[in-house]
Image 1 (cartoon, helix red, strand yellow):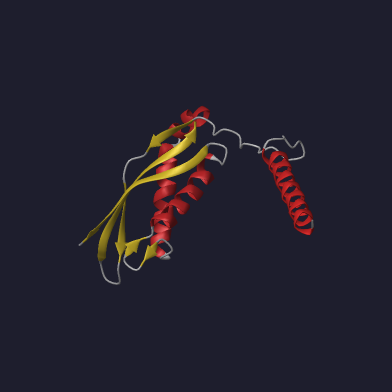
Image 2 (tube, rainbow, N blue to C red):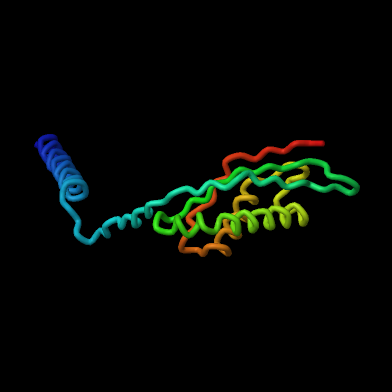
Length: 151
């Protein structure tokens, strides 16, 4: 009789545990929870266009002579509606980019030793483009190629 009572109590405990586990899984995975915040998707990227600029050639002047030439090929990613404004300001953009590159080479903020630090170049060019045509027109600057030619 005691063995039967132990088996009966053990069966009830196991049945209760399985029931609670099933109820918990059902509540967690199959019932919608309205208090969960919905994921807010970021607004879509506005349509953009690229404005290619001519290659920018900057000499790296050493203590006594020009040591190498750095050529940077860039394209400016602009908001589509602002593309005519940016294309009209291409000479000003080229001048601002050359000024930024000359300044970066002079204070060595875009150099890692004798090599050009491309993320630093990109940062300088984005800042220069924003100064020329405004933050609302420029989305990004794409550095397409950087070549260094030692002399």
